Length: 50
Image (cartoon, rainbow, N blue to C red; front, side, top):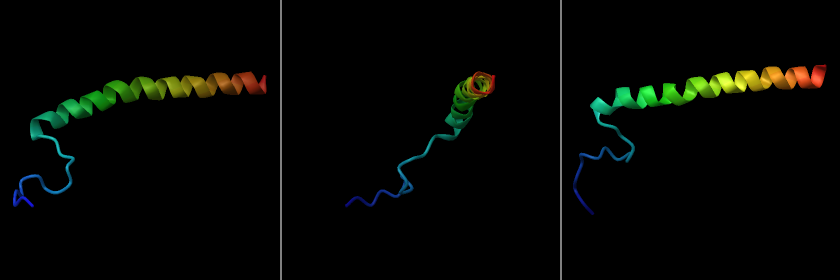
């Protein structure tokens, strides 16, 4: 066993400088995905309700 305590135990951590980049990446993917899902629901509603 190693006595290295710098990992924090979770194994999932990001450097403070990368948090903005990660947030930007989520927005970059999330906004078009949300728009696509919104359009999908609208088209499906029109398709099934006439």
